[in-house]
Length: 245
Image (tube, rainbow, N blue to C red; front, top):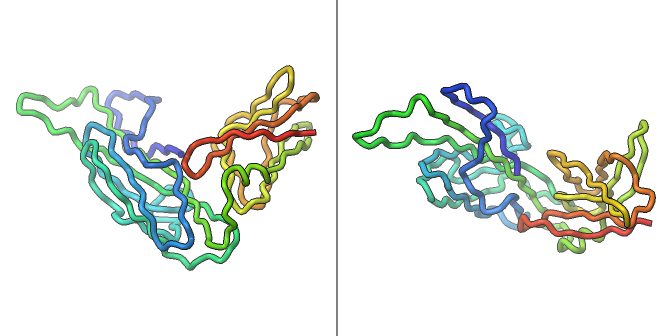
């Protein structure tokens, strides 16, 4: 899940204040089954105030006026009271893709905070006001009906790892021969003496039938195995080991 800060109205010049999205999705990703024309997705407002939410699906630019993907969401704009729940209907509007691998898009949830209603004896808080409009982006995976159904264990077993040196930099290469996008939450090189963790990136995802390279600080000569965690459909990470010889 990626958070993109869209609008800041800061009355005291408080730059660098961390923003946390108040809208809570039911999962960190959306799996869209190609055999269906639509699917439901639930979001909740955990803010103590009402919000206005705009929703759309795109290719990652985060702009509702450009780069539209073959999806519509109903309702596209709605208001949520504190602690309210909203069911979204995501509808696929494109042709039924006959490919044998997944496609990836982004679900955008753009929330605008409402104004707190003041009591008769209260004064507006103008000196300490911080209004945030936050955009949350979640991965959407369109899964055509032709894809061979595999569980997370079967997918993990097909992944392969190797090393390659490019311009004096050592890289770990992950080969993904499956029709699924693979999202890692952790990759680590394990030996009897120490461990080397692949540094976190904004996206450690590997596309279907593709390779991805990750720079590492140094290669372990006595490498025992590679430990990695893959994020499954339920949004949880599952750990596996790859024996490297």
